[in-house]
Amino acid sequence: MNRPNTVQWQTAEGIVYLKPDDALDSSAPGFLDIIDQTLLPGRLERLKLSDPEEIFHAIKTLAVRGAPAIGCAAALGLAACAQRFHAATRSEFLSRLSGTAEYLESSRPTAVNLAWALNRCCTAVRRSEETDPAILLRRLLNEALEILAEDIDMCSAIGRNGLSLIRNGMGILTHCNAGALATGGCGTALAPIYAAKEAGLNIRVYSDETRPLLQGARLTAWELSYNGIDVTTICDSMAAQVMREGKVDLVIVGADRVAANGDAANKIGTYQLAITAKYHQIPFYVAIPYSTIDRSIPDGSHIPIEQRHESEITTFNGKRISPETIKVYNPAFDVTPAKLITGYITEKGVVSAI
Ligand code: MRU
Image 1 (cartoon, rainbow, N blue to C red):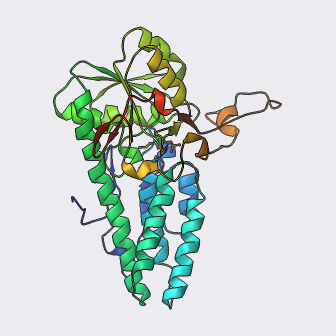
Image 2: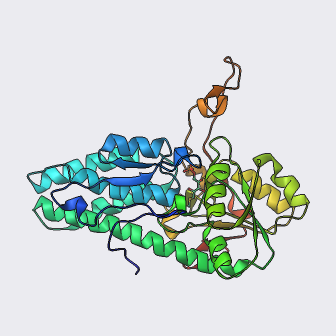
Image 3: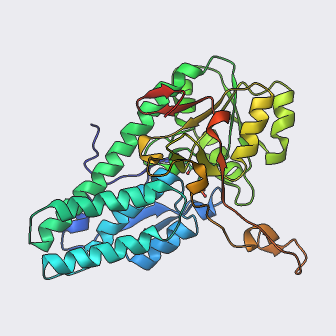
C-alpha cells in the first residue's frame, strides 16, 4: 500500500495537507490542517484545527466536505484532539476518546464514512491491550493514517476501473464535487476523469452548479480546470436540455451512503439527474469506495437525510433574495433508487449491483 510517511492531503493544488508525521504524538501538538473549501475558488486559505468544537464546526459548515474527506478529517482530527487529552490512565483516555468521537460524529448525519472512520479508530484503540495512554495515542494516529492511505489508494483504483467506461470524445456529466477536494486522493466520481486525461483521451466534462452551496460551480469547476480538463458549468436545471442536445454520453456521481440494496444517497439533485439520464438512455454510474456501503440498512428509506439552514436558500452572496415570510425546505441529499443506477465504480471493479 502507498502509505504516506508524512500526513498529507492531496488536493487539486497538490499536497497541501501538511503536518510533520510525528507532530500528532510528540510534545509539540499536531493540527488538522485543511483547505477552507467555503472560500474557494476565490481564496485558497488553510485552517489549522485542534479542538473538537473547531473540527465539528469545519465539518458542519462544509469547510471540509465530501464523504471520504470528512471520514479522513474526523479520524486525523480525533488524533489531534487526543494529543491534548493529557490522560493519566487507559480508562480516562478511552472515555475521552469515545466522547470526542461521538461528538464529531454528530456533525453531519448522511455520509456513512464519518461514523465508519471514527468507529474504526476507536475500535483499533480499544482492541489494543496497552495501558499507557501514549501508546494508545500512537495506535490511534496509525489507524487514522491508515484510513488516509487506503483512501488515496482507493481513489486511484476507482480511477483505473472507471477508465474502462470512457471513450475518446465523450461528454461526461457530474454533480456536486466528488473529486480531490472530497477525498484523501484524486476523488471518486472525478477519478476516472483524471485517469482518462492521463491516458490521453479527449473528454468534456459538464459540472452541475449544485444549488444551493454550489459545490459544482465552485469546487468541481475549480479543480478540473486547475488540472487542465475541459469543464463547462451548467445550472442544475439545464441537465435535461444538455442531454437532449446529445452532449452527454455518461453520468458519474459520488455518494454519501449506499444501502444494502444499492439505493444511493448523494447531493440533492442527483435523483432527478438519474431519472433524466434514464429517459435519455444515458448510462448513470455511482463511484464509491466500499466504505460508503452501509449494509446495516436494507434500502435508501433508512438513510438519514441532513436538513440544512434555510439561509442557504434565501440568501445569495450574503444578500437576502427571498421574501421574509416564506417557508423553506432544504434537504442536503436525496436518494437515487438502485433501479436507476447502471452500475457502481468501486475500488474492486465496475459492478452492476453491490
Ligand atoms: O454536502 P457535501 O458537499 O459534503 O456533499 C458531497 C457529495 O454529495 C458528494 O458527492 C459525496 O460526498 C461523494 S464525495 C467523494
